Image (cartoon, rainbow, N blue to C red):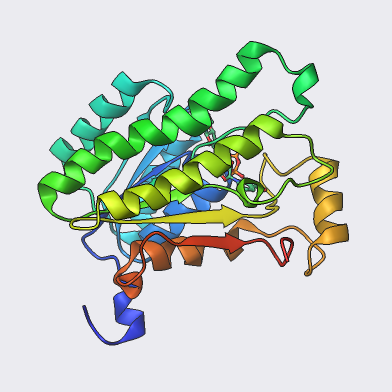
Length: 254
Ligand code: NAI
């Protein structure tokens, strides 16, 4: 590892996979990785803009890229696509398990399929990605997993009713910490817990108002204000960091 901090942040030659890469936080994170010189693999679900985006990033930053359509709640798709990435790029240095969704309604108004949907994307999706990329990391003898959780895995973000979502995030935070221990000999695992960010998920007036009223900075975060954190965690600037859960919430959960 170089001792120069800027050099440590350089990702030249590294291969980074990001899920939920077509939108919001995932897209900003993918940009950060390409800007730092990494080859980037964009996993998207329905938003095919990821294909063009991946080509743009490759051209603009002179890196390799790919875009794969993957439903992270389907274990076969996850394991198959991870194998495809390894075949195409030869390795995976960092994997950002970022895809997620929320249904914002009291539990008494949610249907069981709505409950199950959130569990399958936010919990199963993270577990499948971790399990199959973990096999690659173990084989390689190196790797770096970053999980996008949420501050709502720590606090109930009144007045937004997201009981199941909140619990899925508490799950993946603790799961990530457990993996940091389990994989200590070959990979690092860290968790990012964002507060209110101005993405599709954060677009409701409830989120905007709550960030305005209750966060210390009095506003939502912009995705450009979170990408550097993921770059730091994916890079050699953070080689002593594993099992950490970084809250980035404009001073909401104080
Ligand atoms: P977003 O809605 O813009 O992006 C979510 C992404 O996940 C989309 O690209 C979507 O296609 C993808 N996705 C959803 N279901 C999928 C599936 N089954 N398979 C594959 N991909 C799937 O929202 P945002 O904010 O960028 O969300 C990214 C992560 O950040 C999520 O895990 C979310 O829970 C988390 N987060 C967001 C906060 C916010 O205020 N925006 C706050 C705290 C956490």
